[in-house]
Image 1 (cartoon, rainbow, N blue to C red):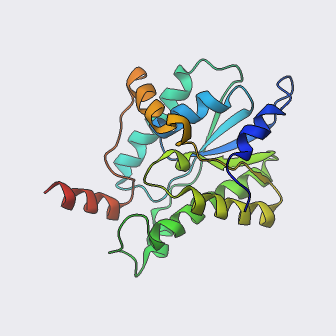
Image 2: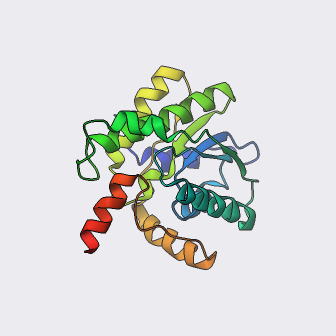
Amino acid sequence: MKKTNQLDDLLKNIDLKNPPTLLLHSCCGPCSSYVLTYLSDYFKITVFYYNPNISPIEEYEERKKEQQKLIEKLNTKNKISYIEGTYDNDSFEKLSVGLEKEKEGNRRCSRCFYLRLNETAVNAKNLNFEYFTTTLTISPYKDSYKLNKIGQILEKKYGVKYLYSDFKKNDGYKKSIELSKKYNLYRQNYCGCIYSKMEREDYEK
């Protein structure tokens, strides 16, 4: 599999006068903050908010609102657009059957990664984007190798270039926290699904 440092090589060769289009899957505003400020000089970015794993619905809506607020506040060289996927929590629940008690980071998460990245790739193809990727690699709790491996599979499946990344590098995660404070963004204390919420609550007891 290609190495994630190829992103730096790619950025060096991008035509800044004619930036390529990128469909960026985003899990939330805080995680997207650094990624958007980092990539917006090089790409025409559309944020794709597709997170059927998030529950309850009120949490989903709160994170969506914060994502939209961030995009409105950011002053970037290339305008950032936004589209929303379908919220269908049942699709996540179906893939979680039998894996409900697994700790975060195991098979349930890998299936969730695939669900969200696959939908991103499908939309990237249908909407004629040149690249697709996800903000998920910024999290210290997410396995960038797994995410990039899924991206490679989907790149071959749909014929849309996947942008390899490990956004947590170079203090990316730390910078996302700083940007979240700057823009007064709501930062959640669990990944998104009901199982990660229960795991967090058990940890805090």
